[in-house]
Length: 473
Image (cartoon, rainbow, N blue to C red; front, side, top):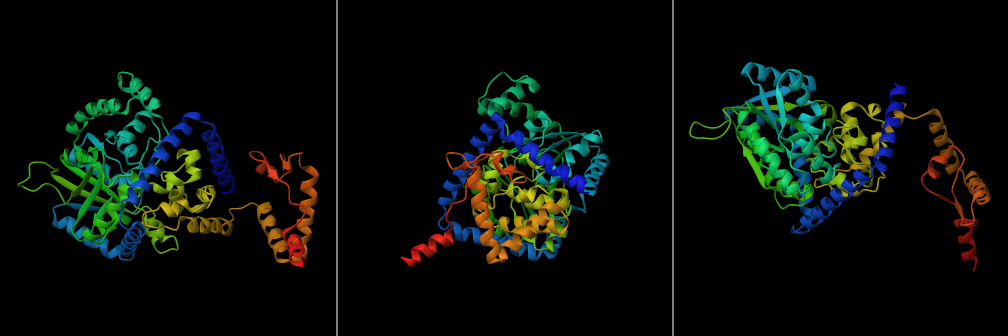
């Protein structure tokens, strides 16, 4: 176990180092996150009272989590009364089996899959492929990722790690697109390719942004229309959701939808907000003949009754990723998790086990920008600190680290030792500083600091000494 933890830590450090020195990645991150942050700030400024709206949204999510079992039962009853069916999955394996078995039962050969973080989490696309079922991502970003055989790097913008020039080159190689780096031309080209995929698909898979318990309605928000086409064109529609996506009412939806687009893409509202309540009726021309709602647990119920339940409030807007100084510099792939960034540094270890991802709780400066940007006011920095505590409690730190903290604790509790340590630090650092008063190389175990930055020498006169002098004047 210790070896596995060490490998995970080393992998995060290696991947982060590579990301920091990848010029194209840095260009893509700078373009994408800057645009997203500025867009969110502008869109939120248009609201009458943004802080009050955030708190109203936070309360809506808290009410839903407090009544989760009851609301899920209400949702199931209303989906069934609307002509749909509800499937329950305890974990990824069961969820994938339910979808694969449904495809086999219905003779499904081709599937279009709209953007869904839960489907990505359970690796539904891979499961379908392994059983000979053709699955095509319909979201433009996800489709590009599929062509590149890569993982998404962002909750909302899966291809944020690529520049438009890289995307153009990929589409030229994979689809024989005429060379261009203009996003509009690339989008038009892919749209033509995808039209036949929607028409030929036997089954469409979508995600769920909100599931409204009082009506049995599922809601998806998007800008491309691919989600609606995946849900409405094939004869069968399967909507996949984590069990935490349920909310109480249309009133709560009205609050939350105001914040989702503003926080995610800087829009007042996405181009498409689709509200689907079961399969098509006898009097309707368009829509699926059959509707299935797949509700996935996969560790969420285990989180619900813990001090980390607040993490389930997340509405997957990605705002915390965009403002995070760590994510802004290393992107999403360095996290080696489906959910990257600050919320991913909390949620991913909670799903997999904190010792399985020991680096993620430390992938934060604890600056608080993530909580400030969060539309439902999730206390992400507090949970990161608690996860670090859990790592220590579960033996996630080396003997040397634990001993160092113990000695630090003893020194900080003793005025005499504190004063002695200060005097020794002044003496030691002033002996090795350069002419500019900086230290460019510290001895182990402190040399990790000076590998990437200088260390200032301690002041010759301590604060206490200066205070006494000033007080005596």
